[in-house]
Length: 270
Image (tube, rainbow, N blue to C red; front, side, top):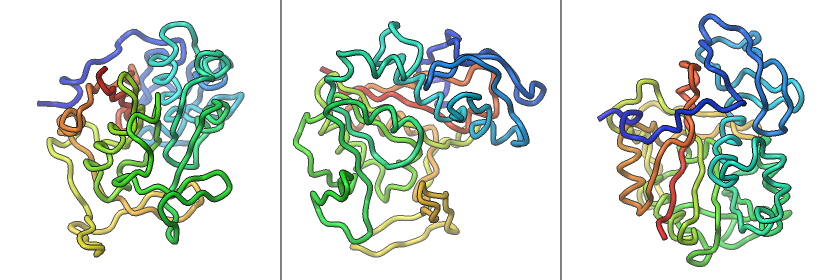
């Protein structure tokens, strides 16, 4: 069954994005779900099939991909009280949350870091378990060092496709979330999505094995990052197997090419 038929959509249009077709509309007015500014979001010179990288906020410069991540966080955490991440993070109740951000790039992270109990991590090539460098934790997502039920919220942006075993990572993220906590994450996914996720590469007994020609995405630091998994329609099944209740939080209404970038909310019941 198609993933986007199975997931529960939040179909009400938000002020951040009006219904537009990237094939015919080069710009549209709206509200940025990161900084809260209003203005015109333009496709610019970006080809329509890269729409998620375009439609940047004229104020903060955030592309559609990041504004959709912010919109998901505002919807899930803000519960209708906020329109932007800027006002959400200023909420005293939100400031008290325990938050774990996986990765060290993207404009969403800059707002999340204002939460008092904030933790972020990456996988250093020469790192060791529980090491911290300049405030950044070394963490292997398939074997997190955090205690059970440590965080209210976990977030990531285009990270899971670079994890050697994403299904094990989902189980670990479920473990470190408090009951009722959320994992909000974005991934690139084909449109329409394939039925089955494809493991492009795996690591067995410390040895990297390629099953398809190597594919890379550019990391926040500019270096190539190997893609281990091309996600498909079975993503929801794997989230449920890890113990989550999962849905796509907010589709890009009318932005048909932006479906290649999807935001999901996975909640630990409780």
